[in-house]
Amino acid sequence: MSNVLNEVLLANRGYAASFDKGDLPMPPGRRFAILTCMDARLDPAKYAGLSEGDAHVIRNAGGRASDDAIRSLVISYKLLGTREWFVIHHTDCGMETFTDDIMRGLLASSLKTASVDEHGWHDCCEGPGSAEANHISWLTIKDQAQSVLEDVQRIKAHPLVPSDIPVYGYIYDVKSGRLIEVPEATAAGK
Image (cartoon, rainbow, N blue to C red; front, side, top):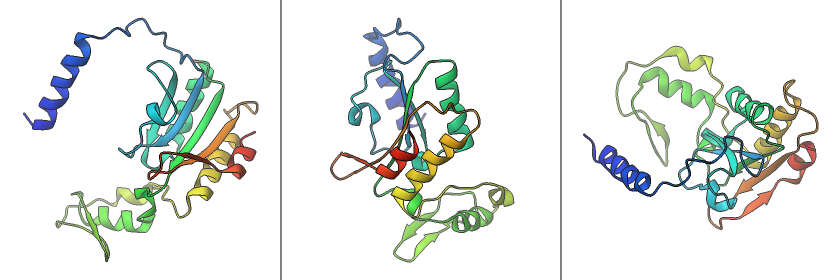
């Protein structure tokens, strides 16, 4: 058994020993959802003042409005009553460090973990790779504010998203902990 697995199971035993949240309702109490990045430096509970049961938090690489993220937001609204959504990207995002072509090339040569240095991304190993990477849009980021705007626009334009649900656009600053509004995105999300 790995050390990480042991640590997680030990932490869970401690959490479960004093667990008192079993009666929380399924719908989020504050009736909003956040779409944000999976980056481990982001803690939406802390930067948005959340407690268990307050809001839905949907996380993926870059906090992008992928088809699956929009699916989750629609379920959040339609079945669980959220009435406001936030798209929150962040500074110093790993999704800014590569392009779709770089990702496709890395995966074509090997499925093992790659590394990056001052010369760019490198594979550690020889194959096998996979051509399946050519069928995925990796939703990489060139400009944070522009990607927030694009994601808000994509959400608002989706035929399953009601026109009256506001979508706010923000960038989380990993150095200060502050949320910085992207005014164009919030305006597009009205």
